[in-house]
Image 1 (tube, rainbow, N blue to C red):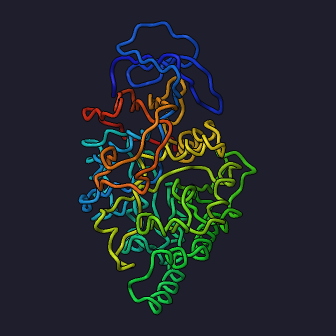
Image 2: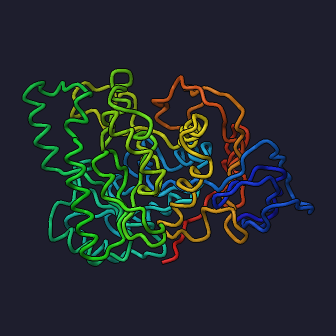
Image 3: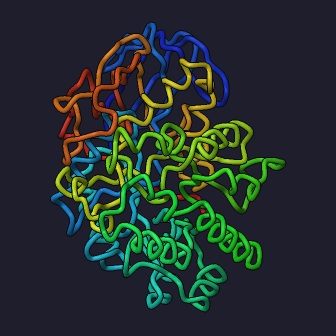
Length: 447
């Protein structure tokens, strides 16, 4: 935990749907005072005039690849990229090697996080057809959720046993987060494509193989199970117009038992972009036709979708370049650039700054009942981002911090950039430099 004090002066503070120019005082890792003029001495004073001061982003879905896949990424490297982009807390997925399918393996990831992560961290417990007892032993106060892959993204982690699924939904003490794509639908579509092209299937066929129909079928099943057992369900990375009607916006987020996440790449790209970016935007669920992309933002704005995340999923350039459709992996690196992508939408008049903060900071904290994070409130952990809205810069290999070293956004110029990121009261990133001495905190949950 941080010791000492930081006084942020004259920033535009964005919190709980409001903005105001004022000061913010941090002491011993916590926010002590917010708003107005604060005249005290502090160990460090930061002039934030002309800048946005917002809560740190909570990204509820990332893949940092450690252990076992560290040629792609590590918890250390991707956490560094995260804080450079304003993400102060991440929740990481269990499909590593070995997968986090028992308590010993799960706690090993927490050990690595404690030793190497500059950001705050939590790790999902994984579900499989044969680890029901281990999954149900997970401590809901100390672990963000139980991840169920109801689709073929992860091979041995696919949960397709109906009795196991029913038992997990009936008994899990944790929030259940699901990847929803119907396995039978994917296999059928893949077989049809293989008959026409063999293994050299063009990537433009990816949204036909991992189709909207498969997403809708699987999401519908997950919601049916959740309603049957009154399970706390969070469906990840919604990608289709067809699924929008599954979710409600007539009650407050705090009362919802079923919530939804949308990712920055599904809000940004459509199927026409495969011609330009190829496997660089191949991901699961697939980026689909424009009418699907166009339906996602309105559902986010009217609160049918609750959270914005990245599904940050790095692979090497060499892996992505494979011509064999079935060997070229799905996933793209995004955690360093998610706020920039959303701020571009704000500049284009598509979403307000207050809504971005709601969906990237407040709502993840509410959905997961994160302990004292996600807001700029007195007594909360000091996870704070200072964003300069005027600086122009271009994404290029020399400023990409992902271990894989590439981004589908290369060549894109953004107006606005994170200037400082404060993690649990420590300055973790400042003016393009990472403070590698900082260590994030294990996130706890009010359950």
